[in-house]
Length: 141
Image 1 (tube, one colour):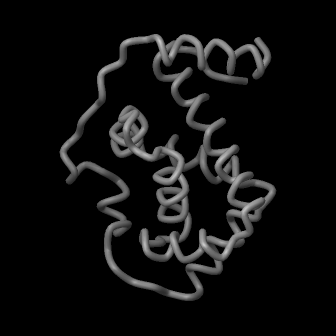
Image 2 (cartoon, one colour):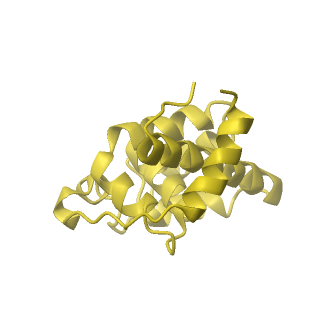
C-alpha cells in the first residue's frame, strides 16, 4: 500500500475512530526523565536544534524519537487537544541533543517561516504514520 493511500486511510479512519487518550504517570515519561522540562538555554544545543530542523534527515530524527520513547509518545500523541507537532519537535531535540523546551523554542524562532512550515509538514506525516501503526496495526513501508 502506497504512503498516499495510507495517509488517506489514516486521515479518514483515525479522525472517525474512537480512540481514548493514553495516560502514563509522568515519572515514566522519557522526555521528563531526560530533562526536557528543565530551564536552561545553551547556545550550542540551540544551534544543534536549528541544524536538525534544517537537516535532510529530520524525518529520521523524528521517527527515531517516537520509536524509542514509548510512554511519552503514547501520552502526547493520543491527546488530540495537545499541539502534537510542537511536542514532537521538542521531544526530538531533547532525545537527540538533550535540549530543553526553552532551547527548542529559541531554535524554532530562529528558523524562517518556510523552514518551520516544512518541519511541521514532516511532523504531521510522522504523527499520521504513528497513528496508523499504533491504531491499525500495520507498519508503513
